[in-house]
Every structure is written in structure tokens, then in C-alpha cells.
Image 1 (cartoon, rainbow, N blue to C red):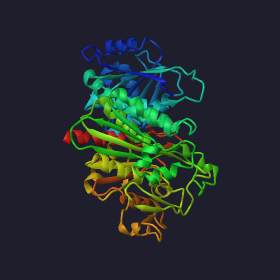
Image 2 (image 1 turned 90 degrees about the horizontal axis):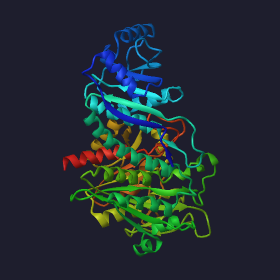
Image 3 (image 1 turned 30 degrees about the vertical axis):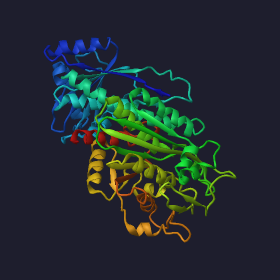
Image 4 (image 1 turned 180 degrees about the vertical axis):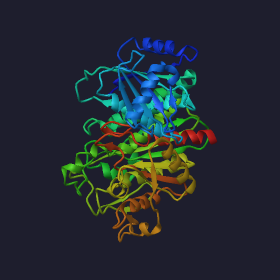
Length: 506
């Protein structure tokens, strides 16, 4: 499904050679083809990689920078055609600014370069990182950004005839850079799995086929369990069964468990509505319903995160619990006003069949809590349009009454560039969920994202818990620095960073 229109390697800089010899050795490593060379500069004028260039090239860069008023601010680019003194057809200088860069900011620079070079004819790209502080980490993260942006989904299109771009990122400590890059490629594998699954049509990605994707992780040592409708009924999980009963494709609960340590597990719960018609509260406009194949992005995110942990063999005990259902209209479907009984025993009046994600999450949160006694629970869901109205697509909504989790998750988001913003979680929003005929109802009247979070809060018991509302983040219509148009795999990088930090502190 995924096409990789790039080839990327990390090579050691020949720093012991004279500058001219190093330049030509580097060019020959790229097979003598027309090549784009990439250097970096800070706003203070420091030019990284200059030891790899003849003096004539260095002088030309300085003159061009002055003429173009190139200051070296973060992300700024200076392009020179047919640079003096070297065989490269094109030289690009990228600005780093003066402040220390986060991993996500370096990734974004790599993505910006991939975008800039995409339409250019040169298929060979050399990236010189010599002289940059913590250069091995920079080289690995920059390569990671190129790869994240270069992803392409081609399942439903003919194979692209575009030539592959070959990147070589030159690092002074090649062994360290390559080891770090390998770990980041495991995270990419999780991101790309989530993107592939979310990009697939609802006709191809339904509860059964999602379960098959999860089962593919068994070869990595992941324990995968799939519960069908009959097993869900035995567990009295009436909310999940109720949402899925309108479809011919029956609901499932999928569990993927990477037991990398003997610590109490961390549970990740992901919303898996493989298509959301809205039910009898049907989504009336094609502008919204056409995107509802992506309503399983939360489940794809937590599955991709488990894959990333397993591929790296991270010493963390993490279990992903994914409730899966199609929310369809039929003679069997839930009706507005119906009451469902959750696995916890709580009765819920369904006042809106289009508020179905919180119903399936309720049963999944209870299941994760009861079956695994986790030390923490994080749920991920494309849950509410009100989150998009509040935060747009720049931030994920974070809800939690655990200050430590808020701090840790927010920090992880800052580091990788998947930023979180804490939204209120308060009893007043829970009061809106009072029902006249059941323990609670599934919708309120005011702040939709906070009301939905308070609904979920009723099913986590005493567990430490955070809810991530990724509505608006799971798809991009224009592309970002990290992803082309389509599914983003949002949350895999954030959770992978956070879980790796947890493993290091346990």
C-alpha cells in the first residue's frame, strides 16, 4: 500500500581528507549523477559543512547569501545553481536559526527539504551535517523527517513512474547516527501502518480486516486477541455491540499486547469506527460523511504505536485495546432513545446515534481496566467536531485530571511536533449527561469535547487516565511538514516518545 519514492542512507564524512578530495569522494559516492548538496547555516552566520567545500564554493555562498538577504533563520532556504568548484548541479543552504531545535523541528526541516526538492530534476541528494552540535542525532532526525514527508499511498492508483530520489546524509559519527535512525524507522513503520489503515476505504478496512492487520504483529512477538460479537455479548458489552449491530459486518474488540517488561501495563485505547454514517442521526452532508472512513484513526494510532514498540523491543509493557464497529443505518441499528447496558453495568440512554465513539470507548476502557489493571490509560479518538472548532488542527485536545500525565504527554508532543492543549474536565460538564430513564445519556448541550471527555471519565474507575481528541489531526487536506495529503498517523510519534521515556524511568 505504501510507496517509498526515496532511498536513504547515512554515510560517514571523510573528515580526514582535504576539502576538495572529500567533496569529490562524496560526489563519486553519489555515482557522479547531477546532485543537490544541502548545507546548514545559523543566523549567527556559522555555515555547517563548509569543511566539505572548496573555498570558491564557500565564497559564492557568502556572496549569494548577502545578495538574497539570507539570514539563516529556521527553515529559510538559499539555492545556488551550478555552484563553483564542485560537480553538483545545485546547492541548497537551509537555515537552522539560533535556538536549539527539538526533534520535531528537525523532522520538519527534513520534510520541508523533501517538499522543496520533489519537483527538481536531480535524483541524487547529499546532505552535509558536519559541525552541527549533536550531529548524529541531527542527521538521524533530519532523515526521519524526509521519510515521513515522502510517504505515498498507492493502493488505489497505478504505480508511479517518478524516479526515486536517493538521499545520503553525511554524519561525522555514522555508527551512532545509523543506530538512532534505525530506531526512528521503527516509529515510521508504526506511523505508516496507521496511515495505510486510515487511508484505506471503508469497504476494505472494516472490523474483520482491521483485526487481520493487528494479527500481522504476532511475528514481532505481540500477543493479539480478537473477540467477536458472541464473546462481546458474553461480557455484556452492550454499548459496543449496540453501535455495531446496524451493520452486516459485526463488531469486534482487538487487543495487541507488547509485554516488553514485567511492570504493570500501560493501556492505550483507540476508537475504531471503521465507517460512521451517523446512524439514524445521519450525517446529512457529503462534505463530512466522505471522510468518515477515518473514524478508526485512533485505533490505527494505538496499533501503530504497539508496532513501533515491538520493532524496537522497547522494555515497556503496553497493551492496545481497540473497539471496532461500523455505525450504519438498518432495521437492526440503534434508534435515538434506546438504552444500552455497558460492560461496567452502567445504563446509557442514546440521545444521539452520531455520538457513538464514546459508547464503544466506554466498553473498551472498562475492559482494559478490568482485564489488565493498568498503571495508566490513554485513549485516542477522533471524537468531536467541537475539538476542531476549539483548537483547529494545530493542537490535539488533552483531557485529564492527572497533572503528571498532562505534563509528560504535553512535553512529548512538544518534542515531536504533535502538540497538545489541555481542555477543561469538570463535574459541571458531567451534570449535562444526567438521564431521566437511565444512569446517564451520551450527549450534553454545551462544550461538546469536554462533555464527551466527562462521559469517558465515568468508565476509567480509579485508573490514571488521559484522553486525546485527535479530530481534525488524523487527516490533512493540504499536507504538513510531516505528511503528504491524506492520513497522518497522528499520535504514533507522540505516544512512542512518551512510552520510551516511561521505559527509561521505570
